[in-house]
Image (cartoon, helix red, strand yellow):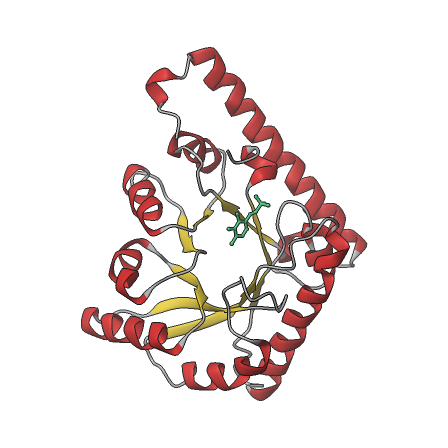
Length: 245
Ligand SMILES: *Cc1c(COP(=O)(O)O)cnc(C)c1O
């Protein structure tokens, strides 16, 4: 990571302009995709995926009005939460989580989007019960059927959700997926269609509650496809902060 002390004021100013311009551009893409899909642009939230991004640059985005930040690695999540603790924003954890790291993540996360195993659910519930807290979560689904990806197998999702609905400390708000990563955005579409179908199926089981309000799907390269298929939250990193090293 770049340390601020070495960043010259002029370079910092230029970086700031770039980040703000990139956010404006992304919002333009969101709006255009929503209008094309007959959706309201307000129906899609922008989460900034800030892994490897220096906290000073994340600060610029938050100070320009962004409120949703997602991190993947526990150490990085905690250290950035601490260095940005003077700011008002919402922290989501969007990386793979191990049960022994739950305590650290819980301290700063308003939402863990990557719940994908029963041991993780049990460990989180246990801690939340001890602390007398409730927490928003999403269930991560492996919609691309790649064995390298985390997330629950689609055929397990309904049973998993039924068990989660019994747990008082967990407030299920939606589903999350990382679509098939391929050369074209179009190749991710089946992943997003599948997540939307799963969400609808779950909501049909709970007509009075409709637990799946958020579908977290779509990234820099394929957000238009995700929005077309029903995303309510897109997670954007490189299109705002540049390519990761
Ligand atoms: C990095 C990351 C993103 C953003 O990807 P970009 O292609 O940089 O926009 C979204 N979701 C998750 C889980 C990520 O790790």
